[in-house]
Image (cartoon, rainbow, N blue to C red; front, side, top):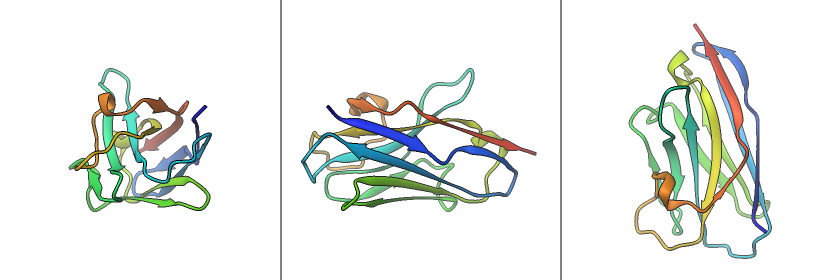
Length: 125
């Protein structure tokens, strides 16, 4: 049973930083797509950053230059370093995983079968 547990959310002021973590367990495959998504009130779930099976990364335009996705294979932990946070980054952030092979890092919710429970990020102006 694949489990994904996010942590690291919180409340920060505009311009601040947060580092989200996602601890993954329950699988033995080393080749996995993993990504970060966010869901803000009144909006659709948005892909923020992702890895494909070959460790290629992709970011949504609003995250480029501010967010960095990384992972520790040994501990099966996914990270999202978020700098220069803005009020519009306020959302519930979710970690996702999938084992299908992808040429490009998937950033669509439909590309993922496993999801965490989320961690809230609130950015005040």
